[in-house]
Length: 123
Image (tube, rainbow, N blue to C red; front, top):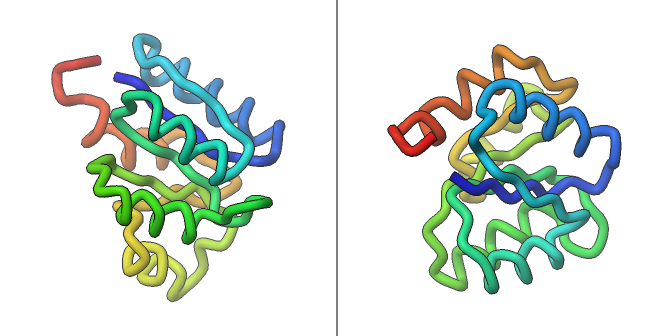
């Protein structure tokens, strides 16, 4: 399994990467800083899952999901956001995210959200 992480904050990149290393040690990851970089990676690579922030420079998470859909890519997309308040979950799902993980990130929540995508026998 190969995950693409689109997150502009270095601290959050380290937290996400560290938690995935603990929960899914056989999963490989690549990290980009915004949606533009994520699109380039998706065009030129093979990924099984996208974790994306919503609030990023150059291209936010909503625009990224829209572009991915327009490209016809079939990849599960999980939003990792600090904006997960009442009503936001529905907005995220309506825009095309498959699920979300709220910040600050809780390892149990991350496991609960990611297990269905990463524990399919390939990990």
